[in-house]
Image 1 (cartoon, rainbow, N blue to C red):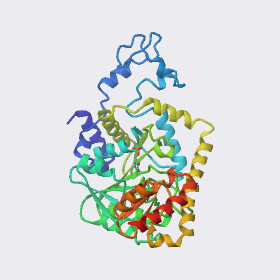
Image 2 (image 1 turned 45 degrees about the horizontal axis):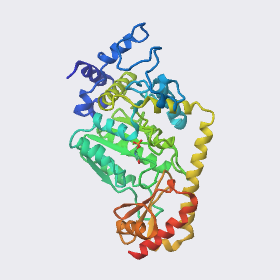
Image 3 (image 1 turned 90 degrees about the horizontal axis):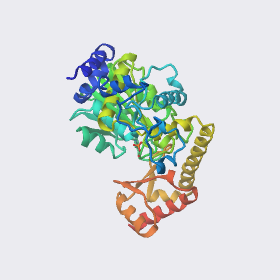
Image 4 (image 1 turned 135 degrees about the vertical axis):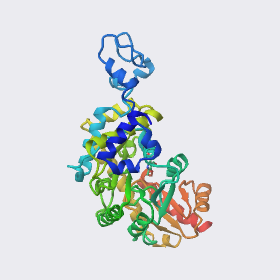
Length: 431
Ligand SMILES: Cc1ncc(COP(=O)(O)O)c(C=O)c1O
């Protein structure tokens, strides 16, 4: 093993043993090459003659750049054309950490790693997979999960996705199946990886406060039983909770200081929170009761090493644009506008289903209260046939998932929502 990796593992051994137990073989071997090219480049920074880095410069020392690009970018060229560090742009990492604490008041006094920038959430999940998942490891997820977890974790890292029923009943009044979660966590096995995604894709469900208490209690029980638990939270749709009584903070806050055997890994980013799907900026943040600041920094190094070995570093242009937006006085108001727009569409779905009790003969909504989506269960069970019928005869596109149809209400003007459900009802009657 590379001595720099061994050094990080030695820190974890004494100051974050649970994290060391959870690391995969690749996670144990990875490190950020502080002593290589990057370090030599840092040494050369500010020298009158700097012939160290792989970036071309104009004669005045600013990044060499092409006018058709430069003319479209108002940012300082150094904040757009040059490389960002593999860890991410430092000011953005700190700003995101500060915003995370504002958005999650329970984190006020929590000890967290500094967020490491990833190429948005998919890449963040993939880096977490690299660090923590060995071939044959199970990842516990509710049955309704984002389908791309199959490629990210099962195909790329050989994980098995171990599912439990998402809900404890069939209708819209059902709740989260915390008993199923607990049973799966307490099943045999020393290493447990739990992946929580709320607001959920595809169901649009976020647990209530009481359900979150039960989820936390289940993880604690597993830890007290001697298991080492990694709780990964995919917070892609963070902040989009539309009903009263639903838990509004990230589940991550529950696991940052829970038990020495629990490590929390927060995967989040600007993609959906800031409506920048194509920008590709996400973050990985670690915490855990048994992890000292040095241990957290060792995990940051391992995450940044994984970034360095996959994408090298994330778009500096996108990172700088976001940082500028966060400092813009219009930012908060614009976020509120976007939230209100999505909430209005969510509420329109509620109203439409309430106004048409006959719809329940052909489809029933699963519980939803947040995020971009909601799902309905098709009475005949053949959602794909309904999807085809909607495409062919109703000019309407949705996603079919087994016996469910997923509706992205987030992408529809409010005025189209009644027609969408009327079309769905009619299409269900035709197949
Ligand atoms: C639950 C969930 N996680 C992650 C992502 C991917 O996010 P990103 O575009 O930032 O990679 C999505 C996108 O659809 C998602 O639904």
